Image (cartoon, rainbow, N blue to C red; front, side):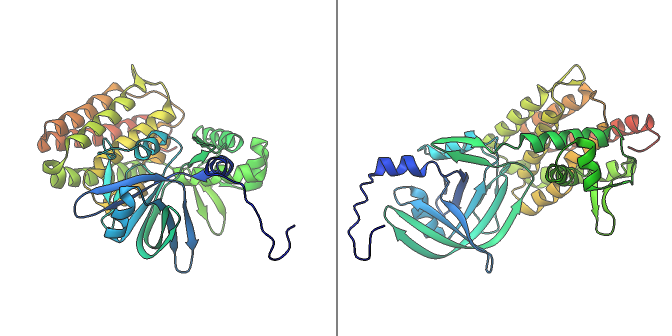
Length: 382
């Protein structure tokens, strides 16, 4: 170890340093902001929390990037934490372009910065201090709003994007979910951590992960006095969720139709096409994939309203959990769902608000009717 005052020759050039520091796994974000002239964004991994009291973040941005000057001018920025399926978004914002936001669904944050719809989380910050370090500026931001949804993060390691591996925990969750959907545990029953771990033959940590995921899905509910309780599912639960989604979407159609851009409509069409490929002849090709694609499609509809409060309300509906419960263990659907959602897309393409409203209501009623059909064969509840 060099003694005090000893000269140390680092001998580390930029290329070597970049290679070594690339072994540090980090999450992937897109940092965005908006000035009076334009919106800006870039992919960044040098983003981290700074303190909890008060909540603060820091973002390190290359001064050569236009986004750096834009953040400095706007005095605020948003950190969009990407999910594991958003590597293409990271690549798009990492490459130089005059339109990094092409085909990206957006909503406006409380400070005016664009938020990427579908990101795992959003953290909106007001710049309170700037620190220059080498070729970068470190923006210290006071967090004014933050939100997140369930999912796994996109990661960056040795120059490539990837995901954390949760294979064991994911398998435990899938098995637990199948058991609940197949009614291996009766509605209203208490499911203990030790019991589930024993039933699945896994460690309690994996069982806890499964219970947490199922709580997000709406399959179980945490009761402070009893533990995790299997949530009963009946017609009223279904009707409330689908009616609430319908009301939100009708409000968006009424207020946003004349402002919808071609890029937003194209994004809606692309999401629909992905969803349509997962239902063939009334059978799900990939049930979980369909649920995710269906959610992303309706999320895109709500995002057209550019209203964060509406998006948050939509997220709180737990609609994927409702759909999971409504289908129970069956994997059979109906082509009419795809047909009516195609009408929604075509109405937006034609900027026809009346047709969009009619199709949205038809879809809601079809969804509720399908649940009634399934519940009829299960005694009225799942």
